[in-house]
Image (spheres, rainbow, N blue to C red):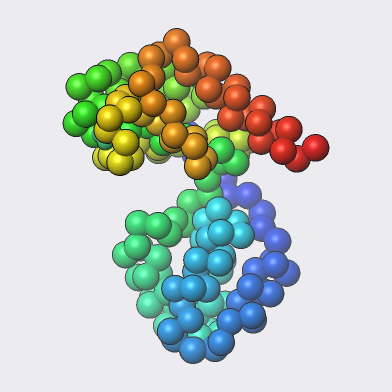
Length: 165
Ligand code: FES
């Protein structure tokens, strides 16, 4: 269940593009700034980026597809990553994934229709000693049990709302 793409601020996109040198070497930094600004690389960015840098759109597309850090799919405001690596698997990551799937109402690899959350699975979060672990936005949560998931989701969503006020 992935929603249709949200509309983006085209003026912001234009400003990001024109702020970069019109040189091929600027491709990766430019894609990074677009990804940071929008949370993903909007497909509509490919052509103007290629034109600005005087390269083929297929080159832009190729770089986006090559690097795992770039995504052409919009993500939710909050990104939950459940570790399914060996250490976490042994310690019950499956039950954590089931609990968060139920809590968010979306499966792994999906984004909620209102773009409030995305759920992903990862191979290792680099915190195996805390297994089973998950990462919500930039924070780690470890030694999890399914009954903690609801409070964590509320905290992550609530904390970000408070930040805005
Ligand atoms: S396997 Fe889960 S953090 Fe390493």
